[in-house]
Amino acid sequence: MKRYDAIKRIVECLSNELIICNIGAPSRELFNIKDRAENFYMLGSMGLASSIAFGLAFSKPKKKVWCIDGDGSILMNLGSLSTIANHHPKNLTLIVIDNGSYGSTGNQKTYTSKKTKLEIIAKGAGFESITVINNEDEIKPTLKNLETGCHFIKINTQPGNAQVANIPLEPEEIKKRFIDSVSR
Ligand SMILES: [Mg+2]
Image 1 (cartoon, rainbow, N blue to C red):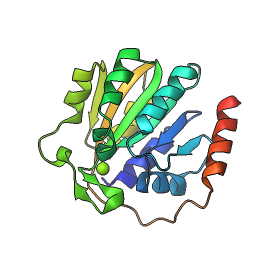
Image 2 (image 1 turned 120 degrees about the vertical axis):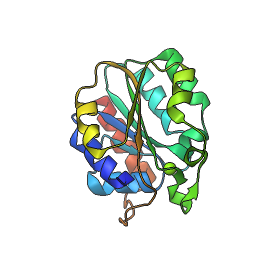
Image 3 (image 1 turned 90 degrees about the vertical axis):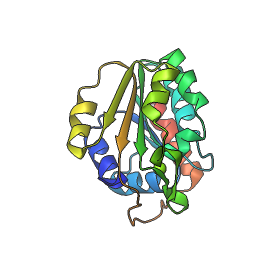
Image 4 (image 1 turned 180 degrees about the vertical axis):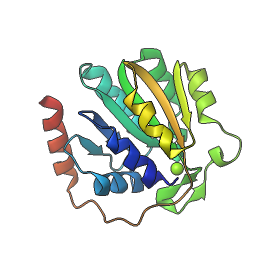
């Protein structure tokens, strides 16, 4: 499974969730699979998708928030896992797509391709709900059956980016329509 396939499956499970998506290729892939105002394509702050998603979930407890993050990105911001786990917002699902590489900068290997296990770090950080997915077919049942809570889901994929077009929206536009959708 490639990250593109994983995002496709994630999108099939969406209802009204707000999505904060990791910078670069993951955001482009999500945009091309299914653009919606409720998608926030994070720009210019690698590593911070989980922090942005946490702040959103914490301040909007009635909204369901899914964060699509990556291994390279979460490795840059491991403190975010402790912050999220200790506050455990009941409306946040952190989905880390682990392809063992920095996909957006040329597929250089990350430490998850060597010894680092993000699910073990998440457990140590205090997450109580941790799921590791290796097979594309497991994504739908996992996301469709999510109970209210704070979840860490890691999806293992192969490295590689889909050849998709750039996002034609201006950053201001992404921000404005996302804020509008949060306020609805
Ligand atoms: Mg990666």
